[in-house]
Length: 207
Length: 292
Image 1 (cartoon, rainbow over the protein chains, first blue to last red):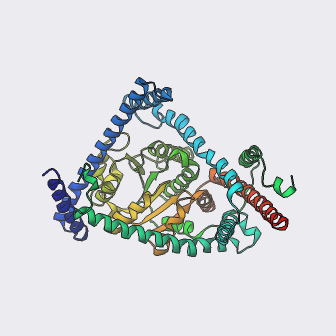
Image 2 (image 1 turned 90 degrees about the vertical axis):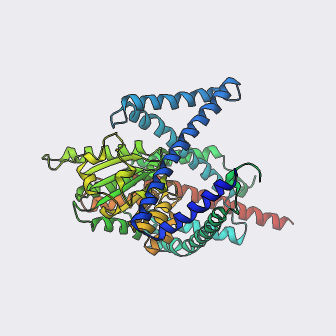
Image 3 (image 1 turned 60 degrees about the vertical axis):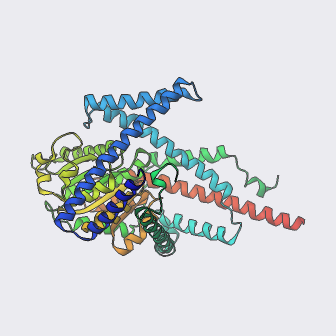
């Protein structure tokens, strides 16, 4: 029973949501709108669960003095401080919350991401070798796109930007479309398996 | 050590030092290299140019994070400059929890810029009349679909806690029928959801401003017309800045132009290092073959 009821709900709701998508009648639209609101509320609860989990994980880490536990204090302090500041003083453009976000979090995030440039430059220099035909083709296409997309690519040759655009519009698009179609068919198959109760891993536990 | 071995073993600290210098240089030495505008960027610009003033709204989904702010923030600012200059109302919203802070910053800075130039009260931008920021909402796909029926049902209050029914703009814009286009500025796969669900169901026009890593995935959608325009990375942002400047909607180029110069310098440096590495590799392989 513990498994049959959720499977039944999944089957009925899955079929009903497919039907309503193709029949834009006021009744089906109203039904869908109610379901969407439920989903929004459920997702908000998932967020509460995630926050609870984060607090539990880091509290345990601090209590057991696990490796790098002082960072957990920073995490918990940062999370609590931002929540309290936002709730008490608001999130207006001139608020303390907004100032902390723009002057602490945003530069920190940007700095972490900027480090990628160093790793990429170093890795490209060491690993990007024309060892095989495929690697050579990759190297050539990368050069074409990089030069073509740079503002002065047009000074290397007037047709360079157009050629780089062709690489993106034709070979890139063909492969992207193939991947997208593959993903789409895979998604349809997985959705059908879930709706029909063939795929049951989402229920958790043992079979 | 032979010369070809030496050029394959350059100390990474030298690479890092050169990289840092080249990133910083364009911030001190301003060089304006004309941008060759890509067709998909122009398509988005032309689409917004074709929207009649004070008619349908442009919905901007601010879904980028501080990590990708250098690419997406200039896009947001240029887009806002174009919309406000043309009298097109803007509705902002977010589905990425890190985005609201950046959305508020983009809106505030552009509104302040316009207000500082306003000669009368009518010229200044009014919150709730010319623009609204609805904030962040969980349950992305469900929210996007439900907005096709009633935006107020999904966002009863704006980001700052005010009831959206109190805004004249939101009394005019009830659902996607009153939205000319949704422009998603994102560093993740958010535009795909807009294409798959609200566009399929309600036929809403979708455009995107994405990081350069994300953009190639959306070329098929540009070709089919499902995406009405695309700004691709720092280049797309710099192109849009140029278009906005050329049409008199801005007084100067923004940060994307400088960022693009830094990026170009790094690309050249990386290419030089790749060439050096490959020349060294080629000669050392030839030498090994000769030794055998």
